[in-house]
Amino acid sequence: MSQAHAAPEDEAYIGYMLSDVARLIRTVFDRRVRDIGLTRAQWLVLTRLYRRPGASQTELADMLEIDRASAGRMIDRMEKNGWVERRPDREDRRINRLHLTDDARRAHAAMWTIAEATVDDALAPLSAAEREQYTKMTERVKGRLQALAGSEP
Image (cartoon, rainbow, N blue to C red; front, side):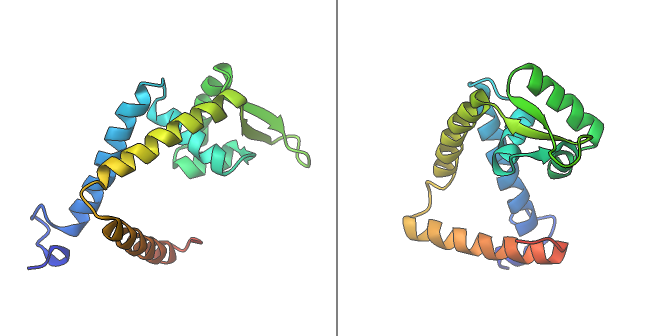
């Protein structure tokens, strides 16, 4: 029986493997960024706002898949610690746009170095050709899942 068609109770079942790989890479990464003083919640906010500067609190909550109140508390803490700035929206003064501070951008750069090292360590058993093939196949699967979920790639 191939790994893709293993029985659901089998550890080799592809669904379990995908979930385990994602969980384990987050666990290793979490431990490594803790050394530079970042929690999972903080690095998630840094990553999302780095990719989408000027997002609103509601947009950030959606990206993090949490409620607006939880996002608000997280943003309050990060603003107090000098990581995030709230700036009024130019067209709608009721909305604040979220931006990373210089300190947060430096932390993001350090975090990114750790992320790259974590991925390199995770993929170490693969040859360069296998890594490229794995990346291309994963990209195709991701695209298919985005289409099934109704989101843009």
